[in-house]
Image (tube, rainbow, N blue to C red; front, side, top):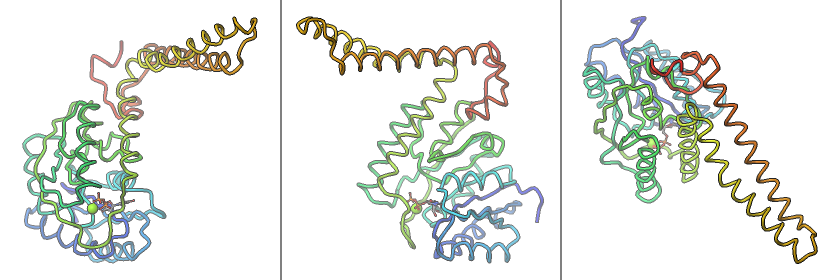
Length: 321
Ligand code: UDP
Ligand code: MG
């Protein structure tokens, strides 16, 4: 096998015993004719069925397959992150292991990457999933993600994407973050393109997600917004957060004092107590913001540390203020 493959195809599998062999065959059938050195990185995300045993068997029969096995189920993002870490290719293509994405599209991704893009995102324009529980939440989520991150991508949830390894390897991934890789990376200024891809209905097994994903995606969106906005202007953001606390605190305190007048000066404990608690919260937030500001402005934030912490690469005029 070539020691430095040009392409790595990364596929996470969780309880996909019926899909994994056809998946391997489909990737080989799609990529072999392209005549480039490539590898497949199969990640078993703690499957409880025969997926891991089959992956092992496939890897033994095909030296281009590298197999990473999790002891328990850590989730799709963690599986993808492990695959990305293990991958040695220059270009990394990620896709689902349930045959819903089509390896025949890999060729188009490579063409788009060769045009100078750093990230190419698939768009399942004829998505074969349920309307109410999948497609509608997805449309809303994608609009929200575009608004919040400022990166407009039609279909963030499509796993079929291609990345220049040097770009993706810098981005920390956790929770459900794999959906936001382009948004997170965009701060570093890569060239991002979008292409339409095929999408098939699930043939075997069941989807691993329900509506609970919506909540996780929303939380992750908040984290991304926080990380990308807070890092350069902590005091501004902390003071915005503190504003409602301050208002509620002052109102409660004023209410408590006013209520004390007809009561001959006896303060109402719930009202004044709440006021004090809220105001203390507000002061703590402001203090945290000030500390953040100090750390950012005075601290020696080395670009490589900063990138590791935030997934952001500082532009040259941002490195030192
Ligand atoms: N997956 C995974 N770990 C999980 C859940 C899913 O590795 O905890 C894999 C799964 O095997 C599949 C891909 O992630 O290859 C997408 O999952 P699924 O098809 O369930 O998602 P959907 O297509 O329904 O959005
Ligand atoms: Mg699927």
